Length: 198
Image: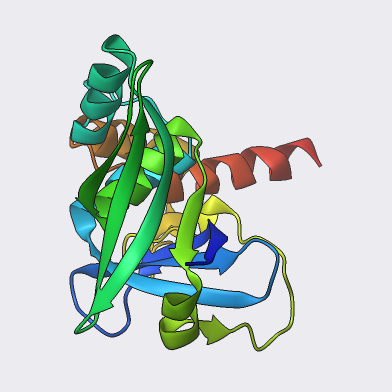
């Protein structure tokens, strides 16, 4: 079966399901998008890796990567292999010195590991045809990871806070390991620092 390469182009709060997020995968050599609804913890795991954040303690997917690396197992690729009743099924293609093994995985976990290993993400062509959406704008530009949102109005209230308050809030949310919210705060701080320079 033909596989098509995808990349993560956006991660945002799901407008269709409360307490859920949507990861948007974009066709690398095309304009189609594949939206997948995932849970909050999985969204946070993907966000942390996309933003190159370093949690004080390893998250579950970091632990899995460390485990695989310690035993010389490389994640070669992940691919979305099936779609049943709105649920995507994925496989991890793992390579050792002696063997290549495919392991069943939830798609959100597969994506979180793919970002950490920097390996390609694929989908079978028939799944993209069935569940993919055409990019109506016709633009192929990748959306930056800072499009990640922890709620529908992520910056509400941040613009009214001082830099001191923002830095204190950033430390607080990092202690709570709310990395998605931390990205919003960090971006607001960076925006203020840029304004100071100009």
